[in-house]
Length: 308
Image (cartoon, rainbow, N blue to C red; front, side, top):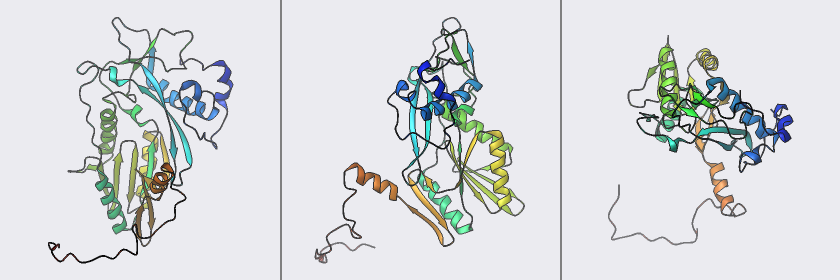
């Protein structure tokens, strides 16, 4: 059992703050433990961790891998913080190839593939949905015997010398992305999907005259189809197999803002532009429709080479 957190903040861990989030990103564990919202985020991660791994006596010649916390705020389309994400990460730089891991490769789609999917969905007239797998990498199975130290700030007072034997993958391990992809791919193929011959992160399901298309980007999943019943069935199926966050219609993905309408799909990066302007203290600058002087006279290059 994971130990209690520091007594000064122990009572904060069980408050319900589902409607609130912290706006700052903690510097370290002690900073995170000072805020009840981050404490809740850490406990959510710890519940998944404790469910998938065993606290055991370290075997002889055991070299446990250290763990650390990574804190990141997840922002919405408008730049507001919508979720505090606390990740328990293994210090994978301590792993030895051939001992702690073998294969590490996992396919990731190119941005062009995402754009093609958006164009395809717009041409077929169906809206894409988005879901997020909570603690996705913790669902992958690993073959090697790996032991990690107890989470910082949550060490067990009774069993401080014990370590965790991993039954599933953990963030930070070199083989984790491959293990998660293999688990998800196996599940989709068993569910009747066909994997793309070129893009190995694209899966297609045909049922009767209806089609469902699924695009995977690590723990983010984009999906849509010609049948509402087929889309709903897939969402329920995924929720039963994994712990999911259904995010509704696709609006914000990989820095792209996406607006799906009857007239088509519009992709822009207004938030990214605002963030760049704010970074360089130019958010109060006057906007211009033409990014150059409108009074500049341009002459034809008579000696230039013709261009098609």
